[in-house]
Image (cartoon, rainbow, N blue to C red):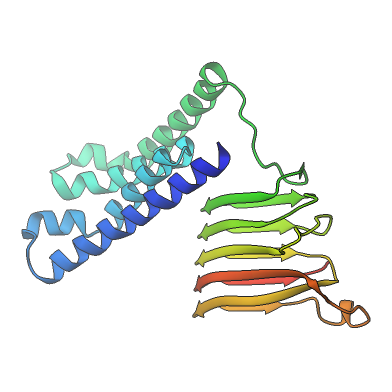
Length: 240
């Protein structure tokens, strides 16, 4: 279930990026009327779009807050707001955000059963992971006895995977990592062989194990391949 949800989030994000690109092309070709151009191509609409994406991905609190903030600042662009309302605009925004936080908090506890999540420090005997992190952070500890790899996507967020207690499968493992304005880090055993196949654009792949493993010989039969893409972000391998 967790793998399916993460895959769906990746699909939603891809659709979201396509929509942004199409709107941008239409704006450059003057295919959007000026009135709608100022609305659709704006930072307010970007916040609303990210909020909708977050809602679809299951993050109701942050998604709703982003939509409220974007809509609040977009409204004056669409209609005339009386001066009296403008004077109390910021207090109203704070109240709206507070109401959203309360509603989502109590709604979550009253209507939804507790869902298992990847809590920091918790061990998971899983052989494969599929994670999507956006505007946040996640720590995952894996102690699989036959680890085969996984997929991880970080967008304006970070993910930290502790694999030091894991054992690779007979065929090794492959991790597909995408990092956009974010970062992924992997803590691995000192005798693993790391093969870097990450393409970095204004980003970097860094192996920080350094002197801590100088006296340990890597075992070619224990090979972890890290492939993927990093743009304005980084992928890091370390031992400690």
